[in-house]
Amino acid sequence: MWFAVLPTLVDLIAPPRCAVCGDFSIAGERDICSGCWPLLTPAAVEPCPDGLARIAAGLYEAELRAAVLALKYGGQQWRGGPLGRAMASLSADLLPPFDALVAVPPSAARLRRRGYDQAFELARGVARTLGCRLAPRWLRRTVDGPRQATLDAAGRARVVGAFSACAPRGARVLLVDDVTTTGSTLSACAAALERAGAWAVSGLTLAYSARLDDDSLSGS
Image (cartoon, rainbow, N blue to C red):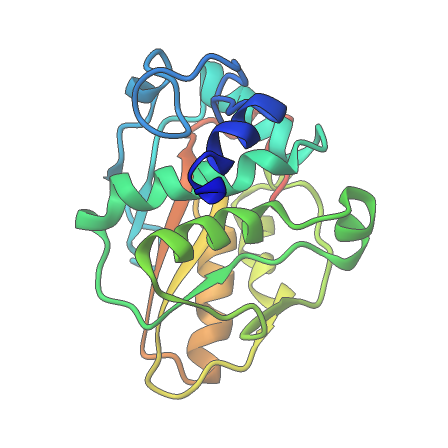
């Protein structure tokens, strides 16, 4: 039947690319080439200062850092879905129980400049792979703060008031974002969700960095 050859025709017109390095010659795990797959080593990283548990799919360095920058600043929206699917398949066994996924939202200004929400693209890939609910209306950013990498500890604490939420009482939420450093943004989102009634919140990010001096880290 004609639909049996459709995937082959699609690959000829738009051949699959590795979501990390962008290479067109995919070999190995789906969406990620065999050379980049080892870069994704999911692990629980140290909890946020408030105890929020967080899982990262890999370290924010080398090709994975370049992939995050291409997704976030390079207009390469296509990377979001495949990277989200990889995050889900690799981290599924480490995740605590949750009822819905919520992407860490960008400010309205950043969303206008970028044209899309990179955290939402990742979350959509995670949701499709795990077959779970994506709840984009449960959380929104109300204040556009400065770049996270430029803040001291006191400044990061002030990020807490930058979000508002409307999560159902008793909900268990998994927050999804691209990169985490100190976890202040995840903590701020969790605080807003818990004020709204969420019972438990945890975090899943594509990458983790312990460096606070990287100018490429700017929240959402």
